[in-house]
Image (cartoon, rainbow, N blue to C red; front, side, top):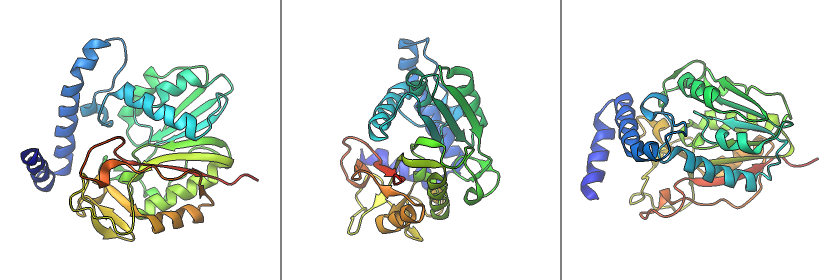
Length: 278
């Protein structure tokens, strides 16, 4: 385990970031080959091409959908916003759940991933996958600043939103702007379920699975040279952004195991926010 961690650290510190991502995606695709052989009819994006997250695409999608359905109090007729939807990992499950009165809007900066989702995700509800033309060193986006991005939905039009492994790659100013946008588009009583890394006072992260270091503006990063690889926010700073966006915490934070030396349960923290009802 120590040797593996040493190799991983050397890789991240030495190789160019695009090459690191390519090698990680290639290794993930190799691990996924047995699942592809077991269920040849289930569409699965290639990570080396679509740059989606690790683990079994459909199993993880089902797990996050179950959490989202429960925590957002999701109804089949809801209008759902999927922030950083990728290749539709959760959209596949939502396609089975939402009815003809429901609607789904997902946005992502990867056109390759969006093409996969548009091709394979089908259901009774209307599904719309939108390319977000924003900058990202981690995912190769070359558009405008994320702070200026406006979500592709109207004000107070969204019943429930989710952002899985999105805020863990956003610079502080981008995270604050995205929360502000979430506050704009959620209906009163609407909820946002997101995952990320919240740094609590007194945390000792030197031996953590994800050893974040102080970065700037209340943010911590796994690699301050490439902060968008993995970034977390101090609780007080994050809660300040939440309040400024007109949102509030709807449930206690569910801590992930990223900040511990032991792998158990969810990796990222789970957070449920709500726009106060009228």
